[in-house]
Each structure stands twice: as structure tokens, then as C-alpha cells.
Amino acid sequence: MIAVRPMMREDVADACRILNQIIAIGGTTAIEIPFSEPLFTQSYLDGTDKICCHVALDDQGEVAGFQWLGANDALPDDCADIATFTRRDPVLKGAGRALFSETSKVASALGISAINATIRADNVSGLSYYDKMGFQDYSVAYGVQLRDGTPVNRISKRFTLR
Image: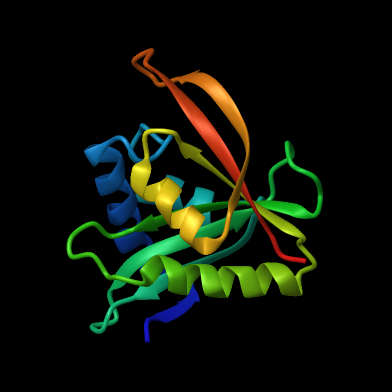
């Protein structure tokens, strides 16, 4: 069983490192600029749009991934945005599933009716993850440009909670 709990200040360095490694690898997140720890804290821990943010811990108690759920003005009031990032090396199989189990419980308890995930179309592992969690495609933003001008489609998926 993978331990999942709310993110705390002492998790920021590890979670930020995981996210920055994913950004450096490229191709799986729309985020293209690495985070400083203060910016990470502002974005994922203290942001006014944050609904919740959880970490998954490995057997040694180290952060193996995190999942953020937040408000997005472009979505209906009863719908929230989700972002999931898990460690690439070593991978902790099941971390994403464990995180989503907890996040969806919190969302349901707060009366959220649906969760939105927007994933780059070239992020095969991300698309597969959200499919496995039960998300359904509902829209595509075509040709969203990366910083270098490369157009990449973004697929939005929705998970209905009730």
C-alpha cells in the first residue's frame, strides 16, 4: 500500500525536484520552465486556486509523486483542474492511482462534480494514465505552441464524480 497524505512544506524540495526533472526530460508536460522552490510553493502549496495537493510516499517515506487539484476560472464552478507528476527514477508503480484515489475522495467531499485534465497529445504516458483512471476525452485545443513555436495539440479529459 502506498502512503498518500497532504503535501507539507518539508515535501517541497523533493516534489519540486520531481517536477523539474520531468520538465527537463521534456515531452510530457505543458510546463516548460523549471520551478524555484519559492515559485513551486506558491503554485502548488499556497496558491489561492489550490483545492488540495497530495504526495505519494515510497517505502522509505520519500516523495515519489504529487497531485494537485485546483480551481480554474475557465471551468464551471463545480469542476476542478488536476495535475499529476510522479518520479521517473526510480518509478513507484501505483503512485498515480493512489494519489487519484485520495484526490477524488476530497473532490467528492467538497461537492465537485467533475475533474478536468488537459494533457499534451504527445504525452502518451499521461494520456494512458488518465484513461486508466476513467477520464473521458471531451475537447481538443489544436496547435497550441510551445515556447520554441512547435504546435502541439492539448487533449482535455473529464472524470465525472457524480
